[in-house]
Length: 285
Image 1 (cartoon, rainbow, N blue to C red):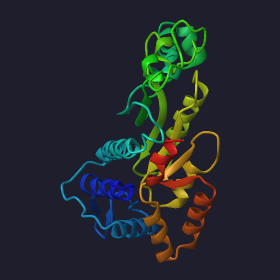
Image 2 (cartoon, rainbow, N blue to C red; image 1 turned 90 degrees about the vertical axis):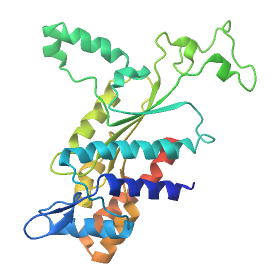
Image 3 (cartoon, rainbow, N blue to C red; image 1 turned 120 degrees about the vertical axis):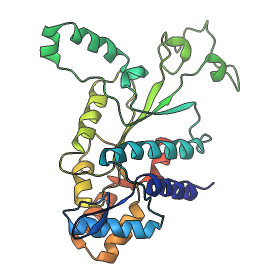
Image 4 (tube, rainbow, N blue to C red; image 1 turned 90 degrees about the horizontal axis):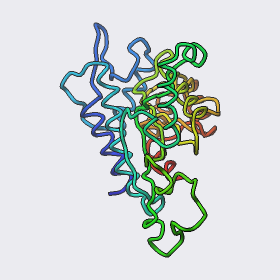
């Protein structure tokens, strides 16, 4: 399958499992639009029509949408990134809501959390919430010496070299995988709903002992001005990815909404917003 086909399957599942038509006394709108915003509704309908998949009919609760968005996005990334093994080889794992203390760079946080829990003085000084559980995590298995020496002899247990790198399984007593990516999924962005993604990002940046994982967010939010609240700025998130960026851009051009289109253009040209189809390739960097 091509990446375009994986992307189509991704959208087909989103429509089947998540997208629904909501209504009130005056209008119908897709459930990723803001019912109080005519612009949001118009953009959301435009994206729906451009993607062209059948909308599911069975009712779902509002809080269910976010969980389903995480699962569908995780499955897409696993399928697509697996096709890039020749570019980024490794044994990879994809999970939702796994604690970062289960990974090599953040293993020490479990000990810190335990110490804080048992010591009120430490708790008042250091605070808590060190161990976050990102919506999606991608982890990489450590390498055995046999795997390292697969093509030719490169290292031996008797060699006095590479005894501290976490990538080598022989160096890790607990053999926890390396956190390769932390992905926050936001079906929509209302008010400050996206700000916990920034908080999690800062936690990952400040508390690591080792390489920084990719830190990104994925959203279906139709309003670029709301996406900007999460995407603009540098230093925390690598980038924000829209579930249907080309369709969003085409819709705004058709609607002639210059304010929203200008913001979208600024986010794209400023390298703060990309399409979901870009994410597997960016994870291979």
